Each structure stands twice: as structure tokens, then as C-alpha cells.
Length: 314
Image (cartoon, rainbow, N blue to C red; front, side, top):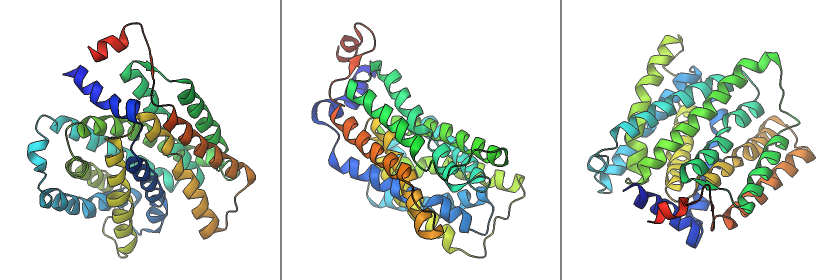
């Protein structure tokens, strides 16, 4: 069973290349998710409470869509409740850590550190598949690393004043990679909307309990930032991301996460007059080149150890 599952996961990207719809989805997902920090800062509730409302407002809509489309979400989740629960709790930790970090560090730092899954998730993908990256994939990962370092380099500020926020955002990136790992497993047997809806149920209680434990204001006076956070970040952004997880390799998903700092830099330029430097633009260009390389280099992975390919296809 494990061998067949591995074949299903690797064959589409190896023999036919990643589907264009999934590539568009992951790009749009990261554009939408990049607006999240802005809405969190505009909300008049605590940062963890903002994460609670993001899920609480979006989950009923996701459940309604899942049942209305006749996908039988409960039946399709049979045997996957543990996976969905772990994913949901990991996502709760991700949102809580990231939202706390957003208000304790710069927008640039929160975006960069919060997307450390850019490298964690692809590394997991190579280990799980027992494959070395091909030369184009390795080149793409290197370009992504350089681009990520340059991206927002002018405005990113490493200081003791922002250390706590940076560490919270870094923890968020690690938990986001854990979330991706378990949601990718769920997506092997489930459609994206039911998977996202059911995992979200496990996310809501931890966020509410943590918000109360931190003494945050939970009830908002101004609802529009929270509604925007739920619609843009959760329904659109996270929905498209979970769809893409079922069709793209961890490397492509990971590198695509660097779209978020590009969009964040643009938002900072438009809203806060944070002008882009040449390093920012060059970093964005390297990320774009990395995405092109990783799409073209996903067809012939090299076995990590002798006999690995035979074990997979046997």
C-alpha cells in the first residue's frame, strides 16, 4: 500500500510535470496569504484571537461547501482523523506563533521567518521520497535561498528589540511545515475542501483557549479586518494552498512560499511607502527563476540509495 501511494504522489510530477492549474493555485494562495499580517495588525483583538476568528468565520463556510458538493467529508476522513487532528493543532500553533510574532517584529521579518517552511518542507519531501534532488532542483533551491536572503534585505532588521518576535515567527514556519506534511497525507485520500474544513475544527479550540490564557481581547468592535482575514487568508489563500498540496511536490510548494515576501514588499511600498531597493527586486527575480527551474527539473529524481527506485516501483 505504501509503495502504491508513493507512486501516486510522484508519477504526475515526474512524467507529466506539475499541472498548470496547481501552479496558478499555489501562486494565488501565496498572494492571498501575504495579506494576513496586514489584517492582523488592523484587527482590534489580540493576535491569537485574530487567528481564532479567522478559523471560526471560515470553517462553517468550508463545511457548508464540503457537504453541498456531495463529497461526503465524514466518510472520506475515515482512518485520517488522527492525521487531520495533528494538522489542525499544528496549524493552531503556527497561527498563534506567527500572529504573536507579527506584532513584535517588523513586517519584513515576520514574513521571512514565518516562511521558513520554504526549506523545511522540501527537505522533508526529499527524505520521504528517498531521492536526491536533481541538478535543476538543487539549483532552484540554491537560487531560492539567495533570493530569500536578498528579499526585503533592506528593510529586514535583526536586533534584540525584535528577537522575541523573530523567534515566534521562526517557530511558526516550523509548525507550518508540520501542517503541510500531515495535510499532504490527508490530501492523498481527500478532496481539498473537506480536508481543510475538518482539520480546521481541530484548530479552533486551541486558539480560543490560548487567547483567553494570554488575556487578549477576543470580542471585536470592528469586524471587517477579521472578515477579510477569514475570506482572503483562510477561504481563498489556505483553500488554494491545500488544493495545490495534492498536485505539487514539496519543493515546488516550498519555493512558492517565497511569493509571500514579494507581495509583502509590494504592500509595504504601496501602503507604508517602503520603497523597494535593487536587492529586493533581484531577490524576487531569483525566486521567479527558481520556480521555473524547479518546474522543469521535477521529472527525473535520482535515487538516494541503490535500489530505492526498485523498492518504490516494485
